Length: 340
Image (cartoon, rainbow, N blue to C red; front, side, top):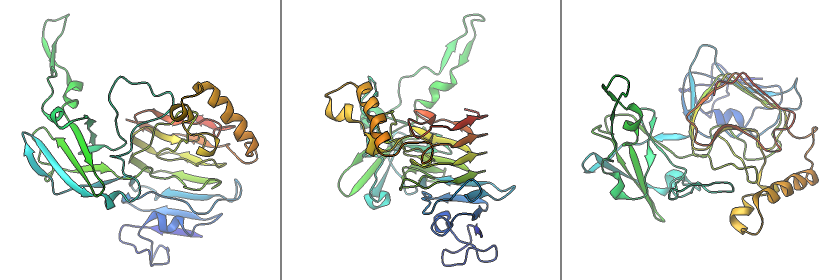
């Protein structure tokens, strides 16, 4: 069966080319082994959560962008109704219902092997015309930072711009209570109501919430803006895209960027250990890593059930921790020809 998804479709439709679905998730709720989901041009703001698995290499479920069409899956939403509250500083007030049961502006970057001298950061982000901002930890830090934007070339004695320091002036800060999240951002003279501003609201773009969703192919998409958590080898390792402790995925020919921590994950899941070193503080991380291996073996970690993925020909950039991550779940996989 071949299903089609378009921006002018309907999830009450049949999913045919003449009567397409509106969301990729609708197709993902009905596609079974041997089916292909073809997604047509447009930006799809959703977390694709495949419901069914393929059965073998020859009976997999394929999700692909229509040939020659640009299809973008984003974990962000566009935000309007910003209000100017200071010199270049704007705020937006959002009901927490926007985030459902996962608020990335409340969730901290946390976990084993995380070593930082900075104050706590969060999984949210703000994007101005596609450029991500930096988080600061107080409202006072939103004012223009004293950062040199030019430097003397020691060879020519000429003054030249220091382009990368400009970006450090684009900063955001969030306040979260039980009902509302208030975002503050320094847009450096830009009007966010006239520009294109997006914020992270979802944890992934294409990632099953259940394990064992085998033999899936994801091909030809651009995917961006996922509030993915820190992913050490002793924790659950969700990514912007990944199989979540399954077998036989092919992730190929995609453009993947702006994952808060991990872009592609072919790693472990929480039941084999989830940041116990940081939570319990009773044993070193390497000990918990060894224990996760034995726990995984007892839970059926073997070639017949886990791994054997193919990750190839993807372009990956601007991700906070890594481009491709995987402990245990990556066994017998091929990773090649990715531009990172």
